Image 1 (cartoon, rainbow, N blue to C red):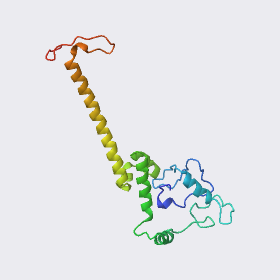
Image 2 (image 1 turned 120 degrees about the horizontal axis):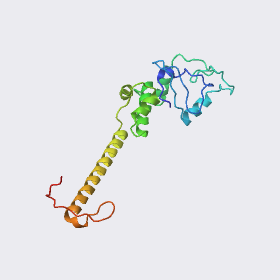
Image 3 (image 1 turned 90 degrees about the vertical axis):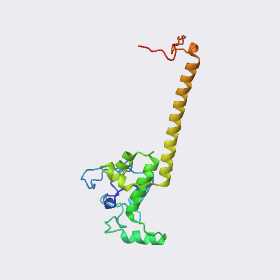
Image 4 (image 1 turned 60 degrees about the horizontal axis):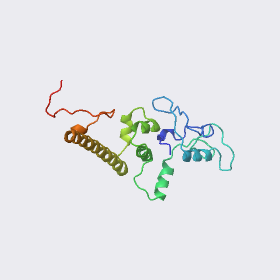
Length: 192
């Protein structure tokens, strides 16, 4: 839901996260804080994680994706494996979700890799490019944008040719931008 790396899963205290835009994590590999965008869906999940199963508020240092009492979880591997088994999904790794997040962001951001880089918390676009695989939907959208651009270019070229042809065939009716008639010189005349 946030595209955060696996190592950041439980690092934020659930009750201290400002749920409007995002929060600096301080857990980045580079040691630089970053803002994690919080979607409305993630906000709802985080809000639920502010309380224990009995409905009591968790302490400020509780882990977002910790145990029922907000304590740290050593590993999510068992839960992930069981979840995949129940869903009859094979060969899906937790980190694949991060790649999926990046690919979907790229599809919805109109191909802006810089936005995806910032969302995923990468320092370089080269790192982001390693995550992104060509999806059929993204490739189709890129093809459509390319074809639209080609059609526009062709239309502009045709309009330009049409104007030149019109001027060549009717030089006496050519007007300048102010609207007064211009005298046309022969097409083979040299001007200095």
